Image (cartoon, rainbow, N blue to C red; front, side, top):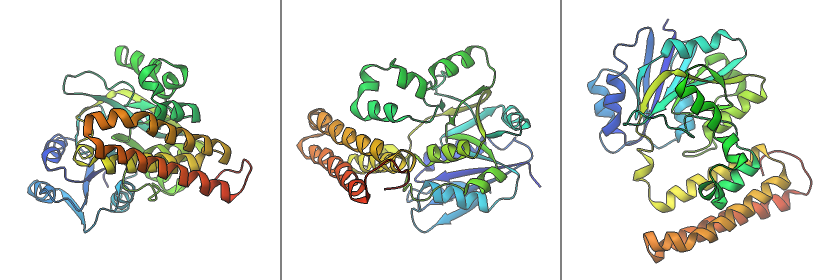
Length: 318
């Protein structure tokens, strides 16, 4: 049996998946599976040409569902979730070494851009506090990136220090683009939540549930992958990008925050969409302003649904 199952989820990834798979050809003791979410650009053909196991879905089941399919289709005790635009360079053994600690539940490595520079603020994060998400949707994190909530959320101190003097450091949310976890932990927490459809926040939710189960997260900078980033997202329309991202953000907040805090997040999302409307209109045209209106409607509908569900501080999806 291989020691690591490498699961790669693709969606219109023909331009990236070849390089990703080529980088894995010399990696020993692994089994690789690609789960394709109904790509229309020839992605399955690129995978098949390299003789890699392919599971082709007839529909876009979403990232979380595809991850679960890939994990179920493999047998190795360790799983590495790798994005198709992430090319493994080195350090798989270093990532595995994190799990010599029996409390380790997830671990991720360093992601670098094409220029070789670490992708600070993305490759390792702590779980988002309500303040961090509120500042994010209101644009505060862009205007004041050094604010304490954002600094903690994006692990600025940890990742900048580790990139200069590489050593493993505890973090709550290693990046889903380059994420390792034991199969036993995935089973214990119930896998990825497929209600985060089609993308965003499913990896954040997974890491939150891993932490709640008593496990630790680690960032190992000796494990390195070159990462282009957002390859499939660029193909989405502005409308879908906004709807998917804010929909998943609200789903995460509903699941992990109290009802009162969730309502505040809903109002912040609505307010942020109103603030951004003039800028979006200037960049994308007047019709794009309607996209902001859709986000406002989404946030307020979730707010009133929460209100009808009852007052108080009970946690849970609303």
